[in-house]
Length: 212
Image (cartoon, rainbow, N blue to C red):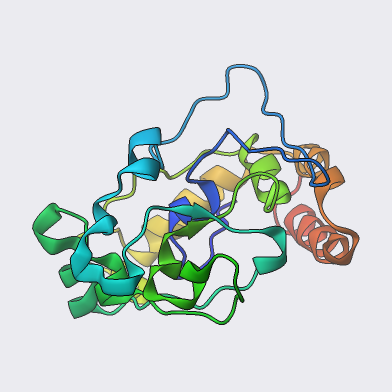
């Protein structure tokens, strides 16, 4: 099964996986032994990020951890031209300037969320605990390459380099059949009560559509 949210970066949800801050009064995340790290927000990228470039104006910032109360964030731009400009010839230092969208939502603190630097904010396993629990059982696409910039539908068109619709459906089927419903349930215990109903619906659809 492939689950993703459009227009949200990998690092926004999984940048520090599998290491969560685990402060008091927040759901803890403790990874399985030998869980591999991801190609995400290394220590160097968190303390000396290229997006500190002064050209980003008030949005110049290092990546910063968002709070559980800041689950809703303004979406960054994902158009063809702005994404190219954000990459800045591979220097990767102009994301706030070119694709950043200030909040609210969310509201401060920190004040950075009210600037274009909001797109450097990230969650960890204490905020998106259910997603990190799912990740313990699934493959992670921490290295994803595309042949073009722009919205998701461009990359899924036949001939775009991402494969035809038939090939994508085949890949989807192969991935789904390699997991059983009990593994979905093992990740359920950390899902907030308000979201358990949607999880059960997803599980039931999965069982009826594929089978164990």
